[in-house]
Amino acid sequence: MSFLSVDGTQLHYQVLGPLFPKPGVTIVFLHGLVMDNLSSWFFTVANPAAQQARVLLYDLRGHGMSDRPKQGYSITQHLDDLQELVDHVAPEDQLILVGNSFGGLLALNFARRCPERTAGLILVDAQVNDQAWRDDMLGSLRLEGEARYEKIALNFQNWLGRHSTRKSNRLARNAHELVDQTSLLDDLYASVYMDEAGLQNISAPVLAIYGEDSDIIGNADRLQRSLPRGRIQVFAGCTHSVLWEQTEALRDVILETIQEQMQALAPIPSNEPWNQPTERQVL
Image (cartoon, rainbow, N blue to C red):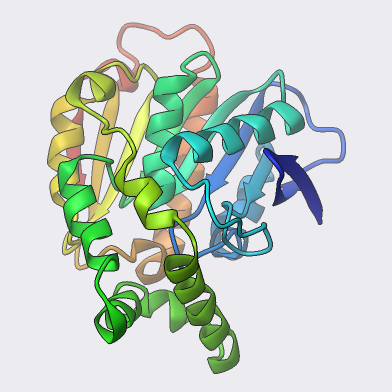
């Protein structure tokens, strides 16, 4: 168990893999917002991924075992946290970012901010910080009283269902405190958008995975139009909770893609698949 202080906030992180990993690539797993923490990746994909390279997981500020400050939750602050962590853990490495939901949003924004550090992205039902995200996702969490709690429970019912009643109650309580007692929603609501030019300027290869029945499946269309080096895979019959609904199949796709993106760090031939127009595949 390790902690790093960023702007006075203690961030909890874990590093997996060999004691003396071969330098070059670190895989960073980014979890979702409000009712999530690093354990969602730790118990699904992170440990097998650590057989390929060093892995970094961490609890976003306000989540898990990281501190929960009253203020400081903008996308810019989250990116500052991520940049401080990777500079601390793996300052010389290229990064493969694996992000679920809001974690995918952070991965996209980090790739735009630090293209020289980003070797690849793997997005799982990723949100994109555009007008629709602000109005739909953040707008629903700005509801009052019981309506807000019902929305939280609905959005994260699959996450809660993975745990005992005791742990689920604690996660729900933590989520309510994060939403009610911090500036999280206001900070995210005021954050800058990711525009089309921003997506088009992401030079790293991207695999974007979406559930066929996800409420944000429209992001697959947007990424397919905008990413210069991307692939879209749609998991049939899945919702926004692909990580829980198809854990084993998703794990296999992620591990295979990590290997492909690591190999792509070598000089890229013109017929390399990441150089082709973004395509969509339904699994």
